[in-house]
Image 1 (cartoon, rainbow, N blue to C red):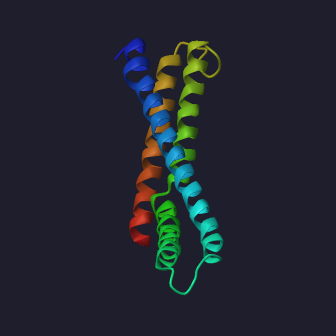
Image 2: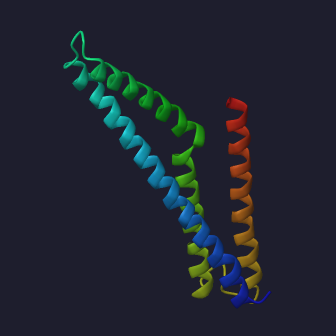
Length: 143
C-alpha cells in the first residue's frame, strides 16, 4: 500500500470513525445526563402537589424516580463518557500525526517517514482496540 492509499483508506477512515464515535458518545452521555438531572429535579417539585387522591402525580413522581435510577445505571455501565474521551483523544492523536507527516515535521522528517507513520498509527489503533477490549471485559465482570 502506498502513502496516498494508506492516508486515505486507513488513516482518514480511522480519523472519521473515531470522530463519529466520539460525537455519538458525547451526545448520548450529555442527553442522558440532562434527562437524569431534569427528572431528578422534577421529583421534589411535583411532590409538593401530591394530594391524597391524586394518582397521576404520584404515578409521575414514581416514574421519574425509576427513570433517574435507570439512567444512573445505564450511563456508567455503557461508559459513554469514557468512550467519548478515549475516541476523541485517539482521533486527535491520529490527526496530529497526520499533520506532522504531511508537513515533514519530526519524527517524520527523514527517509523512513512513511514507515514511522504506519508504525505509530497502527500502534495507536492497536492500543485503542486493547483499551476497548479491556473496558468490555471489565463491564462484563461488573454485570
